[in-house]
Length: 432
Image 1 (tube, rainbow, N blue to C red):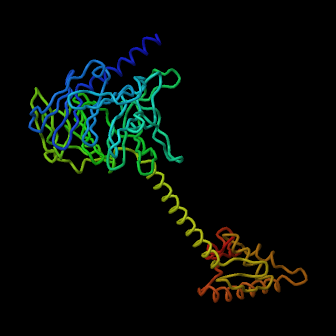
Image 2: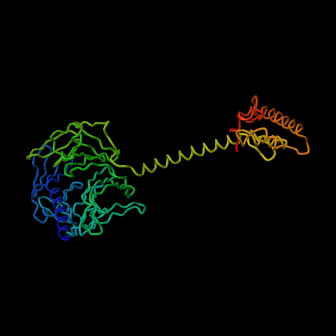
Image 3: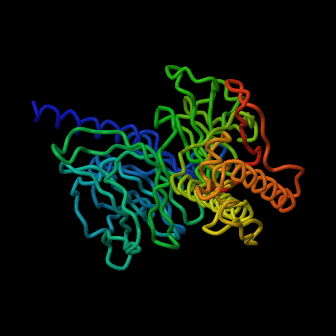
């Protein structure tokens, strides 16, 4: 069963590679290359054949890609390390490598006039590094990274877009390292900065499922994707903008085949029945109010969360400082009196006891208040007189300190009309 799965998986890679081989079109300044069957055709933008080169089986079966560098044209093996250069009317092999078959469905592109390759599947694993073809050694060399760079997983069959020293990768397949066979779609979008030699995980992809053959690189870090009818999406085409982090719906794509097409000079070209048809990219009308994020930007999300956290902390600290400052200005009982507006007001012992009862209780009856200041060496009438004097003195002082009419209030008890109930409406102002 495992052998069957492996052969099925490997066969899928070969089929994908053959599809790429059949539609491989490479645009240049004043001509383009078309790989068709065992021939490599050079045509101008009027679809006039300028030249034709025969590819023998060793090249044709190598799942190849046409790449131009300076004024030379090269045929690159997708699965192995072979490189052929077209010299006059012949194909000259220039590499000292071999057909290792470790990079099926890798990405081949040109950066700074150097041929690069990323990823690919072979021998029960996928590659996660960049290599480049050295014209000094005629071999593929490992491209070194910044030591602080993140590392993508091993990937194959990814979509890529190159823009001004930035390489964007989306989608692709990750192979389960436990069995070397089971494929899992990649949900992350990666960017490689050639200036910094550094990989960055931009975040989790919001991409809808689409046919990889129905998308093309249109420059500036963008891909144009034709809607798969089975996906039941509302618009016929979308632009995936990696730089701006947008999925931008497009209108105006009616029966124009994105498959077997290529982009050049702000126009899209497609070969249909040996005819070259052209559409200006500007003829596709963007629906600006329908765009959404291409990926969940984890760095920006973390930055936003950090900013929100900092703002929340500042607000909390400000509130605490205000509360602390406000509490400092609120009246508070001390051991020997009262502190208000950072000023201490000493009180006699009996006035302090009465104030403490009023602040810590909603109501205090006359009996409880009398008990707190009662002097057993004096008569009841005398104690009662002292109680009234204490209340009047305290009321006069606090009314003046707080600039109010009356601090201590009283009323008769509803249960016993002979009982007086004392209270203050300002107890909530105190810090308890």
